[in-house]
Length: 312
Image (tube, rainbow, N blue to C red):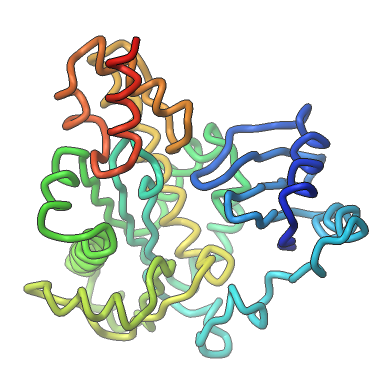
């Protein structure tokens, strides 16, 4: 169960203060993230607050009383979660796609395709696969290798060097479309004829409107266009996307470690003020060229970090 509230800045501060003793690692575009029992509360920069987990509705109800808009349950009838998926899609044999690292200044952009047949869904559930936002980083690391041993997948890691080169030719969405298309194609090459015959669709965790995706797809030399479906919060619609998200998150975390190792650090995720400060210290330690190898340079963090580095 998940519930979303849209609240004003004063109420947002009330929530932030209330959960200050229960804070956990934030996610991209969030102001805070906290854990209250089995409920995860994430406050986003947009002013929306997402309550996830068992008891989400009752936890969110506390804040409805202070004048927040009525909770919107995350079901297929929710506007933000509206999908055109066919009935019974959750049980289909599909390829699920997701990417991680798009909202983080440091680290790679990782894209994963996972093929999940009907007869493996029970096992995947048994492993504990679910929405990656409800899993800790250690749980992600543990689950990723188990998923890799269980179902076919393909992982594409776009390093900051490659990403920065790509930005000169495409915008961020264009790069992601290209990576998703490539990753799907690479996974399909790994599948047997029998597996391909059983494939009923490809679900992409939606990061841009379908029309936009297909527009960028026309620029690809070998576009994959068959049985494509798009939906926001894809992890809640099919376990294949949840599997892809977990493997992608694991690879992203590994990139933060690997890319930071030459400088004696693990790079932080996110794009907040703390990232500006960290980047400034890294620039002073290794020179401005360090950003070519570790960061997505078109983010505003670059100019902010350069300014801080010059001031100190």
